[in-house]
Length: 265
Image 1 (cartoon, rainbow, N blue to C red):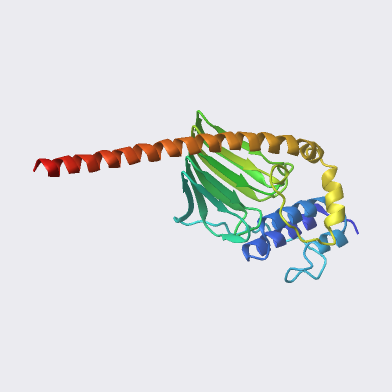
Image 2 (image 1 turned 45 degrees about the horizontal axis):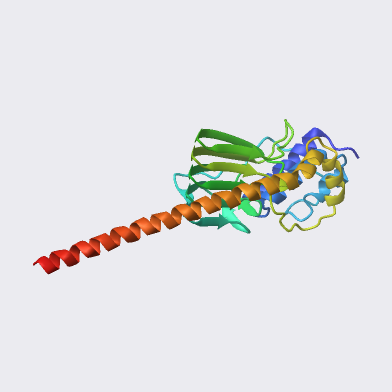
């Protein structure tokens, strides 16, 4: 039997609730949400929730309840000062995030994170550094903020209009640095489990505008990013070396001054 729009929205709500409960990662939530909107029959919708609680029956519409959103005054911070900080793999996001890169690199890979809501809020500050946020293609990205002699960019294949996709909201403050939000097509792939619905979902997804072009452009984007990153790291190493030499010279000058003072007294 053909599925209705209301039944698709009901399945999306089940998936969002499963994410709040920690049963799905952001990548799984995004993929299954997209697959729900692409599903054409009840059987295709049912495949998306067979491994979730209370999902054995055919989907039915539910009132427009909203998944709880992570919040609170506390923010989880990731800081890199003339170094590298990376967070990837399995981790939980139940509060707002902050990233600070000062002549360093911060990488936040959200794809395998367990997200306790439909919105992820991130404040990213880059001073002669690089903040990179990796998300699944298919999320909605809202990037705002200020860039002075730097860049803030989004390279994500976002969800089509009208879909209730997860939202990644980034407020960037950039000074001679970069804040970038990139999708799967621009990053190293992660290992994904195979499900019965994967084949028809992937086939329909590949027919959507944007995905075919992204696959052809991914290699050139990666090469350009790699070259720019190598150049930046070389500049950062040179600056770090010069800073250490200046600090060592200051120490030597202080020691010499103390020796001369002792010899004079």
